[in-house]
Length: 360
Image 1 (cartoon, rainbow, N blue to C red):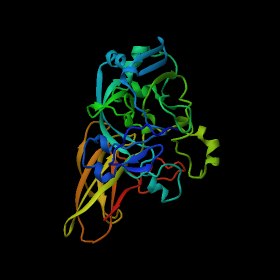
Image 2: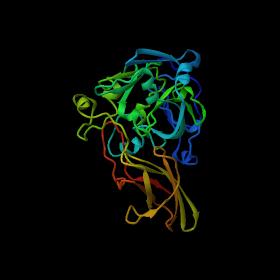
Image 3: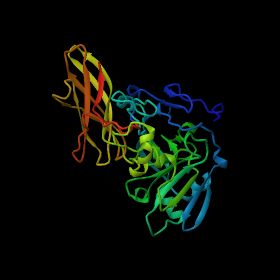
Image 4: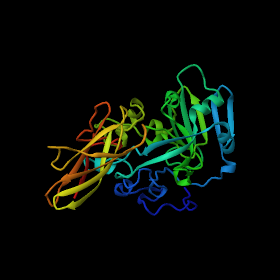
């Protein structure tokens, strides 16, 4: 694969893998902003990053009642009104490094910085489906594909979601061309990427150039043989092979929280700051923190939350005389679910959500 022509990447990121370029910021930097600035948005790639000209960019739609429809970037923007939504993009492997301390896992050793909370602007997929003629019968999956750049494990990158997710009134699945009011950069899938609020980033296909309405899920490697939670008895690639097809593709990631900063602001007071993300059952309702391994908990103050799909920022001041120790965090959602003490282990190292933890 040719990586020589990639655009320059942000120097604010910690590189986890150079080729493909996979890099993340520190959580401490992230929580300084409600909306994540471009230079702190993590980069997750399965192949080279490429630059594309909006003037020559097309998206092909297949499977609709109008047959195959090919629209230029300009035609897409003209066909449907612009929509905006704030949503947190996060990698399925967030906190994989922590899970790997329990037992080795497969994948990029991500810390807690592979998350970005952004205001996305683009075209609602529900509007596009009406434009190309949504099938009125049968079980429908919306398959998103990108043939725009080379890929490690397949001939293209693909993912799919149920059509109901696109048609839900509060979902706002879109083909986005803006991030925080600016044109989407190449590093983050520009000129056009999928945004699926509430779903893991593996479904947010970058450089999307094909949309297919199908009775089946995407057959792509990243939908069928990756980004699935296998049982803890699976410890290697060989034992995983016969099981990939028996487990569902991941959608929403679980309720989570991260302690991003701990600082002493007085002899007996710690200042703690972090973020939390909702699972599938409802938004984050509260975050608690502890300096005694969960024997006692104190409520944190929520300082930011915007709509249903954003992350939640929180902070707390804790009375503590100890010179050294550990702060834990746990989140609770509107359905009453509480973040578990231990995140379950799986071979692929995805969906880790044990209590947040940071020492001082």
